Length: 137
Image (cartoon, rainbow, N blue to C red):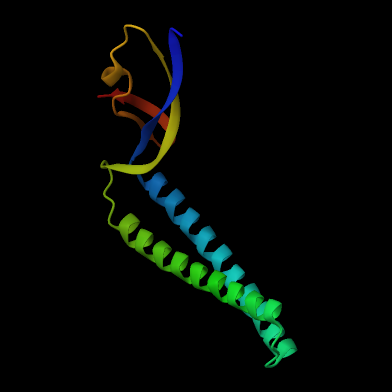
């Protein structure tokens, strides 16, 4: 074999602008609303099941209740994470770079390539969604 395709991580960063702040705020609000809706639905289902079983020893129903409670706890933790992200987003200053995420990128490696150079850290810099720079360290 003379070449292989591997995956490397690429960091996505955005230059903070008012538009980015608006988009991040909208994403947070949507996530929070969806999570609130999920919590309300789960609480309603849980109460209905609790009334139905009313001290029943039905193991399957008890396990379902425990699963619902675990899902509720998970949603509450997610709401707390969203609140922390909101604080982080509120502290962003225009012009600074903000890491939005990491994506996988395929890389072809062939005999004679510099392994460390090919798999070095890479970043894509965005300005209001448009790629303005690609960095390869």
